Image 1 (cartoon, helix red, strand yellow):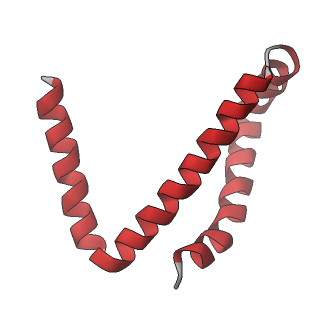
Image 2 (image 1 turned 90 degrees about the vertical axis):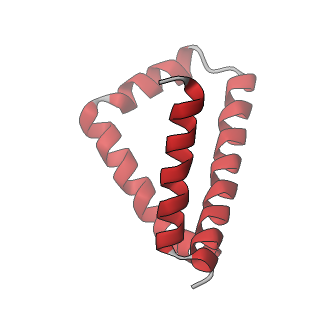
Image 3 (image 1 turned 180 degrees about the horizontal axis):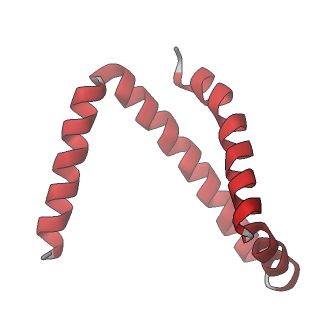
Length: 90
């Protein structure tokens, strides 16, 4: 399955799940208050840019997973975490 096809099928369901959990936890009320009183054009532009970058990263991740396989991605992720911890000094 093509990565964009997979994203178009998964994103609406993930959005509904995220909004539902935000509503249950009360986070939607905080977002509504923040956006009504503190949202600026720079904040909105930053949120839009964050969404575009996340979308691009999802496409790259699904494409890499399709070409390399799940085991290779798991090994690479474990190595990435290990290297990050060692380089941070923890």
